[in-house]
Amino acid sequence: MKGVILAGGNGTRLAPLTTIMNKHLLPVGKYPMIHYGIEKFRQAGIDDILLITGKAAAGDFINYLGSGRQWNIRLTYRIQEEASGIANALELAEPFILPGEKFIVLLGDNLFADDLSGYLEQFLNQTEKAMVLLKQVSDPERYGVPSFKDGRIEHIYEKPEQPPSSYCVTGIYGYDSDVFKRVRQIAPSRRGELEISDVNNLYAKDGELAYQILQGWWTDAGTFPSLLEASQYWMKNSL
Image (tube, rainbow, N blue to C red; front, side, top):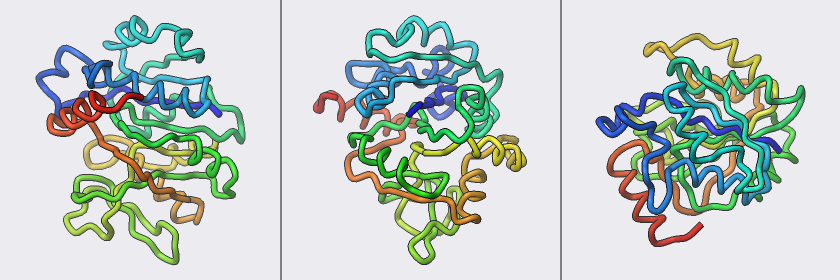
């Protein structure tokens, strides 16, 4: 299975650090943040990886990751010219994916303890065309939050004031090549970006969105408190 890591964006919540460095290259424990996503993919047997980032940081990623040879993987790079949303970045992966092929997408600031292997096996065997990984959290209003009906995700609400559940949608997604057609069906949000929740809701509406639940530690390391939490976790726990 192929993997796509999205490592662009402006990282405004981590300014001023991100005025001089891409968020995904900030130190987390002993390594740059991006190291953990690459290693999790490699451990799950994903050895063909596309990394999408902005042009200002591309050289820094190449300096650290190179061709991927040190991990026995093959790395390909694509440039997102401007930060226009997760779904916009994902669309850049279309030439990388074969028709009908399933693949996994990871937001590079999502750090987690679980081995992805079992989740990927289930995704490959499911009939639905898309999958999201959920995590039960104490503050779901910070994230995209799913509502459920008859054991399926009915809708995902982005940062709701009154969350319909205690689960959040993590930045780990599974799709097949049909996702690129669905990206072209959505319109920019009020903040002018193509939102991945809108794409996932198209799948949910069609009954094509499965989910699994992460069991171990997880964080979205996009704020100073969560970046500190991630560093403390990975200093105590080796990959």
